[in-house]
Length: 280
Image 1 (tube, rainbow, N blue to C red):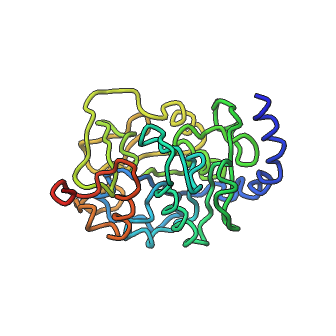
Image 2: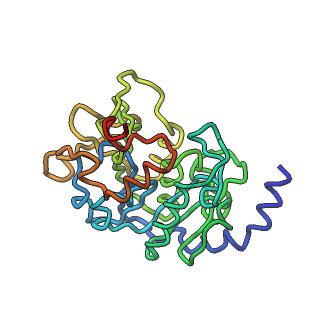
Image 3: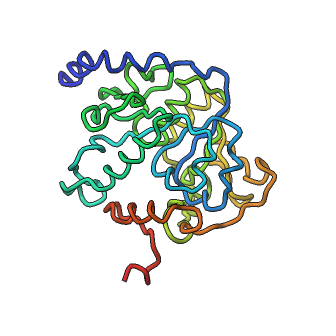
């Protein structure tokens, strides 16, 4: 508790830089992109009509350049340092291969604003990097979640990026590629080989509290690949209804850069990037 209080005081000037973003897009519409396998069914060029926010490794998608990507979020603590405790390998302390890859890509897009965990302040630099932290304050709604104060919606990537969108003032939000917020719930990433894995039971959705709170601040929906899926908590809209086109499945090697897939495969994150016969 004392440590968080001290950190709050010493980070005042760092957080102060975020104040200029509050309400900057008041009343506007946006897309928020995740990394779900449903992106394999979507033509991202169809989403170029609105400002986009994103997270994860979306930058390896070949159609990333067609998006009006204005803001990105990376909430993983201590993600941009040479060594880290890898959560995908039982927190083994090792060379941070995946963090280096992300850092290289982040630095290659100077026109995108990046919000990230305050813990990464000494791990990455640049005039387009901004830092947020929760200071161990629990989430209790977006009215108490501020970019320049205690940014409490950091429980997941989706919670963080929605919190950013609401702080920026967006009032109409469309989620794309957040498959665990659909029913049936689906898991997997667009950059992994093969289809997704479905949970056909009605389980508690990830970020339930955050999604319910978001609906009080914005008109928010999720894009589903077809009528077999619907939003879980959030209302859903099919890809065809939104774009007028039928969804069309493409494998990861068709929609992702080969160099990006190779780097992700080397990242020790347990991703299934290539088919089994390739890995042998």
